[in-house]
Each structure stands twice: as C-alpha cells, then as structure tokens.
Image 1 (cartoon, rainbow over the protein chains, first blue to last red):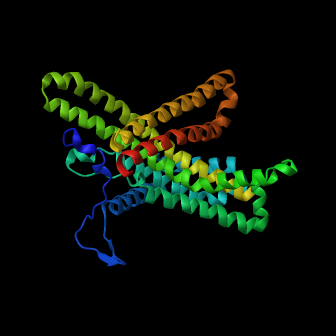
Image 2 (tube, rainbow over the protein chains, first blue to last red; image 1 turned 90 degrees about the horizontal axis):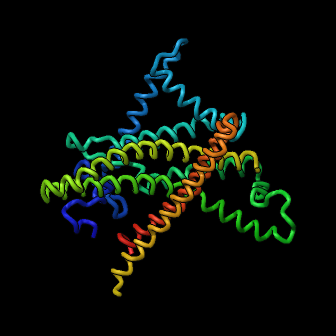
Image 3 (tube, one colour; image 1 turned 135 degrees about the horizontal axis):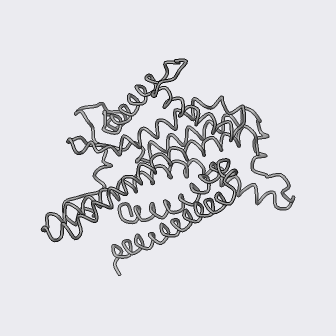
Length: 261
Length: 75
C-alpha cells in the first residue's frame, strides 16, 4: 500500500523481527529476542552507564554529576510542585519513567543507519507505551484505594456539585478517569510514530527525486533534505517534550490519588 | 466510489483534524507567551500548566493521525 511510489516503505522501520534465529514457543506464540528487546536493552545499558558516571557523590560535582543531578533535581521539583512534600516518595518511579522514555526516544533518533545499523524506536509501539501507561494507572489505583479506601470515589464528584447533577457528573468524571491510560500511552506512541514516518517519507522524496535526475534532485531533493534537517531538530524537541509530558501527567494523576482534589 | 477510494479520502479528511490541533497548540503557546511577556515573574510557575494544555490540545491532533493510519493500513 505505502510502497507504491518507489521502493521506500516508511512503515518498514517499525517492523519487529527476531535478532537471532530460534526462540521458543508458548501457546502458539514464538518468544524470541527481537530488535525491540535489543533496543530496550541498549536503552537500559545507556541509562545505567549515564547514572553510574554521575552517582559518585563528590562534594564538588563534576560536569557529569551535574548532568545527572540536574535531571534528578528536575523530577524532584516537578513532584514537589504537583503533589507536595509527600510526592518525593514517587520520585524513583517517575524518574525511571522519564529517563527510560527520554533515552529510548533519543536513541531511536540517532543516525545509526549511516553506518549500516537499524535504529528502532522502542516508544513507537503501543505495546510498550501502553504497558508504561497501565503501570502508571495501576499505581494511581493502588495508592488511591490504599490511602482513601472507598472514599477514593469522591474524586469523581467535585466539591459544590448540585445534587441533581451528581449522577451525571459522576459518569463524566469516571469516563475521563478511565480514558487516562489510553490517552497517556497513545500520545507518546503516536507522537514518535508520526515523526519517524514524516522523516522517512521525506527521505524517500530525496532518494526518488535524485534517482530521477539532477534537475529533479535539485528541485525536490534539496528542499526536502533541508526540511529533514529542520524536522530532525523538531523531533529531538518532541522526544524531550513527550518524555516530560508523560512524567508530568503521571505526577498529576498520582496527585489526584494522594490528595483527592 | 469504491471502498478503497473512500478510505483514502477519509484519511485525507483526517488531516483537517491535525491542522485544527496545530491551531490549538499554537493558541496555547501564543497565549502563554503573550501573558508571560506582560508578567515575566509569574511565567516560570505556570510552565506545568502550559505543558498540560499543550498535551491536551496535541492529543486530539494525534487522534486524527491515528484515524488516518487506521483507515490506510488497518481498515
């Protein structure tokens, strides 16, 4: 469908394939070490190296330690601003979430294709972002019901709602609460997918127009390439903003569970 | 009109939603900048709300993109 113009298929980059042949079968599904798993592992290793380099606890921080501390300080400030002093408890989770998404987004953008590798953006799959969103939602439910018990349902009835409106408002608030994990996971997944498709479509323009001749290459290929450079810069911004938005919304949802409005 | 053509037209129409989300996101950042320049001291404290508004406006455009992708590749 998409590969009709030339041979460039912008969806090919999202295909999941086993890195090694083999794998074992469970209930008719083959479990193998895929490129998705490989890039998640790479993200984890990069993150681990980054954190190890900065957790030296030197009295006078070096550059690396300053980088790590500015990230931890950023998340800490965000949690204290949104949840209050109690929010510090959730810093390990929100920090891991933020750093994992940030590193996965940026690793997927690296121009590894230049040296023959196949970069893969882990966060461009709803399975990954959906699971992250479900974990966040589960934490909200556990904290909410654990702290407030059934009183947690008062979250769905804002203060000062007129009595006849309560059933209606309750339904609307419940619906908007239940939609949260979907919108949380979908936002990250679609933002990453859309950006990568856009980049590959433009790359297809450059290759096809250059193959068609020098004139077409100058007329279509060169502007597309210039646009790609700009969009790549935009994509780095999107990678950071989406990681921030995911962490921010998670902390807001946790705030709902902790403080009940 | 056969079904294939209708799908592609529908996917194209979904681009209107993406354009509307562009207006929304521009409105969020534009209004923020406008008021941040009037009162720069209060601007830093509102960055969380800025990004919440951005996320809400952007989500609807992304949903339009999902509709287009479903029409082209799934339906």
